[in-house]
Image (cartoon, rainbow, N blue to C red; front, side, top):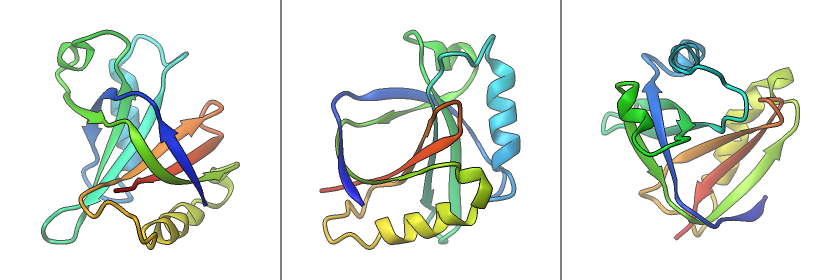
Length: 136
């Protein structure tokens, strides 16, 4: 684990998965279908528990221009700048179980923002993933 500082807010728009984790691929497919191209795009996964303890997952893309999310009829979310605890997963698709295990470890950090969320930042054309949780 290492500290990661996000130096600017990132406005994203998203598609909410119908279930977790089964609905995640379909949510990303739906998100990608809205876009003219995925080249040069930043993609994220945002997850958190609802009041019943069920995980809500949002497949998200950074806006490339103001109002892009609204143009596609999507809701938006602001990933706020600040400090996160992070861990980078290389070739995460070879063992997708490591994603949940990594977040369990990150969520045990003593300075965790208890009102935060789990953030996946996809890198290298989705080959690597940066797992992040916000700190207080």
